[in-house]
Image (cartoon, rainbow over all chains, first blue to last red):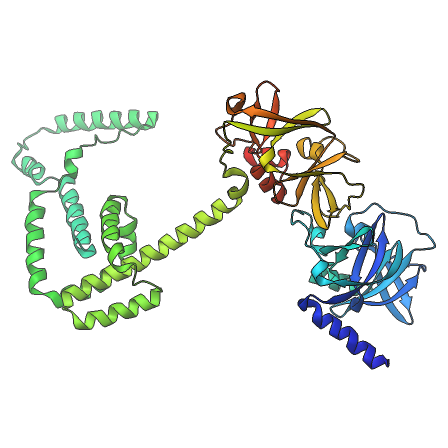
Length: 169
Length: 348
């Protein structure tokens, strides 16, 4: 399969989202839970590298990295999700994601796999969250013996936050 | 009664009031009074007046003139004025139409006048039933009224135009009021709209314990009891929300019962059992199941008002434990409200 064919197949998967067909999700771990982001939003996965802190940046920003000549802001995903911080390990990864033309990196404990999920199997979560970050969760789905929490990265930041984060570099 | 008549009534009333403030016969008394007073008497009277005025200023008191309700009565001369006006109206309908239009633009202050509220309300209720169905939008009503005015007499046209516009105002005002009421009532819907559960004379209830606190739930509201090793927490949820448990393919929302009841305690690590509520996906954690018992309706002290405990249907007297109002409990969960939040809401 050529590169263009692959790309079109991914786009088809995205188009079938509303029809309740298969979607591919990149799963990663934070603490004891597994999370998933749409594979179309993931550009690449990097090993942990030194992150240069940026003075005056928001608390959920770890700093910036140089990605082949481009400056990318790395987000402290645990802080953003309200999860207690943890030490960096050999499994720690930086996922470079693209959401609405913004490119950022999110620090995760580990990246697991690419999972095919049927949208019909994705359930909504109760809308009882009063905190802002409750809206990041788009649904939950069974994956093996665990529940996979699916994240909507477009809601990770507000428009002003996106601008602030991407302009750090 | 049209608004220009009300206007004239008020004008006549104010004229009457002005006339009464300076009665004509007072001037006559002064005119006929004997003016042959000596200069000494005048100076004495002036001195007394000045002393009285100084005394009042020193005490800084103001004595309001006594209020005489009879002065508010309509002067009989007003009836004559009114009769003349009615006659003029009959003779000059065209003039009336022009005056009506002018009055409509200035009618708002009169509508706000408290003494005219009853008249306005009568007018509104009479007109509302006839024209309310015609009023879909303000502009449509105005256009329809214009069409109607061409086919009918000019005096009727003036009345209907005014009536239609007043109706439009009333409908618009009603809509605004309704919207405001809806907005005000929306947050009160879930926790406070309350009706206690209706149970037969004999019913079964499941008794269970959470950190030593005893609860009972009617069996008819019991969705099931299950055990679960893995509860997946979700970030951004209230602290009493333990997470989601996968029970035979159903994603059950698990509530940390003790954290929901007492906000200041440490959250529970694990509950032995989960009690599903009704047919919903909500479940509450419990430590110990005591089993079910048959209760008679008289065994329970039923609550009549929700108060600040809508989740409580009543107290089982012999057992001294709380009988849960499952529907209200679910509503509270769905609104993200625990007992502390509810207390705060009630205190506000």
